Amino acid sequence: MTLLRYLFVGGTAAAVDFLLFGSLIFVGNISWVYAAIGSFIVATLVNYLLSIRFVFDSGVRFNKSAEIGLVFLVSAGGLAINQSAMWLMIEKLGVHPILAKPVSTLTVFTWNYALRLKWIFNRQNH
Image 1 (cartoon, rainbow, N blue to C red):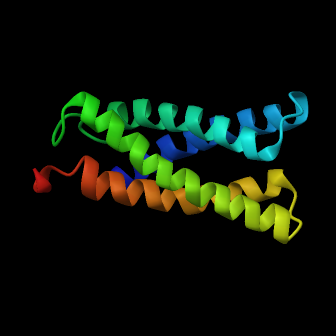
Image 2 (cartoon, rainbow, N blue to C red):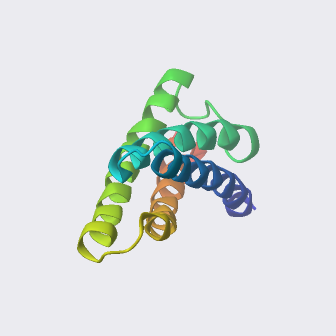
């Protein structure tokens, strides 16, 4: 059930990520590199807020400040994966940024869910 709820939360955060990314590159005329970073950070915040509301128990292992810091630390790794995948697809394979974004997002989804479930919000490791 946790995975199902996280799919909903992740899907919502992904929608925020895609919409903001598309707006930044098409309307704001911002480079895909900076647009991807900005949209990823906003989506991470949305993901965290929805995750502690619908998926994970906040504060079970770490205090709130440490928990938020760890979520953003895990997300920094996710951002590195996201940017690497985007760079490979856009710069090396010639894929349009809007098509590259969902592929990189799916990769990062797995990373984020696994580390949050097993490390940040895991009661058993407490």
